[in-house]
Amino acid sequence: MKIRFSLFLFILLICNQALKSQKTVSDTLAYVKKFEINKEKYIGKPFSLLLKDMTLLQPKNAKSDISEDPESPLQSTMFMFSDKNISSANGTFLIIKWKADAIPNTPIEFFEQEHNYRFTLSERNFFEKKVVKDIVVYKK
Image 1: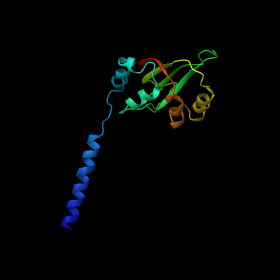
Image 2: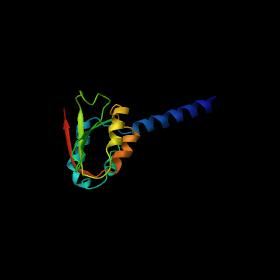
Image 3: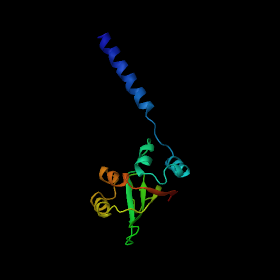
Image 4: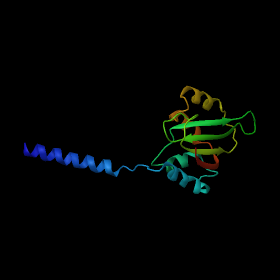
């Protein structure tokens, strides 16, 4: 019985330490602003690099600005870091302006409608290869 209780306490201690070691973001704006300040590291590179560096917080929603201009059909994408409605919510936004490319926009238009602007694995896979032209962060 004593060994069982000691084992239980040991497991509780390990779980407690694991929970404490997980980092959280208390100031989303400050965290995301770091990427805008260091944007030279990401400009001209695939978006996957920026996503990889966002270790503490990943986008939850994404809404793209798609134009009829065949030279640059996907102008930018606005990423949000909360579960609020992307169209009406206040919050911190990361806007990525994209370098023009020949990748069709039809998949992202479908994904946005299908997933209600959630940043799912489908959206992630679409954007990972897109090249970053500029980064702007603001709070609404």
